[in-house]
Length: 253
Image (tube, rainbow, N blue to C red; front, side):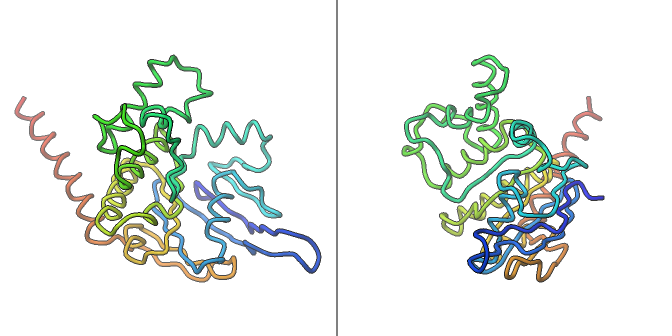
């Protein structure tokens, strides 16, 4: 059994002759620490499947298990707790509240967590530092660029130290250079052990993933593995080099 298992997931809307099948029987296994890209034409069921994998959208039939737990057999409160503890969401349109500072936006997932306000603020600032924005905690969203807003959205997704990041078109509103920077950031987080599942329309960005799943008419049409592009491999190489330098310093000490 994989860490994440979708068993014949079906999602339908409407009834009778008006029934629309968004996802039509998906079987999918994702191991812990994988980076998976999901592609397909508009209307192929990508975002619907992603929302089911995030515990947000109950399937019409089928089962969805994470670490052996049947997510949709949980109560609504238990499922909310699962999302809070295990899943970080990154959206194309950022969904930052314009009247909150960047730190306050990042703190939102901690609203129901039993932590002191200063602890929550420290966690938010730490998350902002991880995405390269340590000095912008007090700014408002309209005071930073689109790429920085997406970094804030990622910081908000990781502030709870989730095991899985679900990213729905995270580069959709960004230029090519900024999109590549966001992909490198997601790759770095994946190399730290976070499972990343990303919906994208971009063949180039899909190559940052280790596996590509193509959907067509709500079903898995094709899979490819070991897709990591040169940029992704470079991130991994840089990370390995840093570890070696740290190791050398320890030996000298």
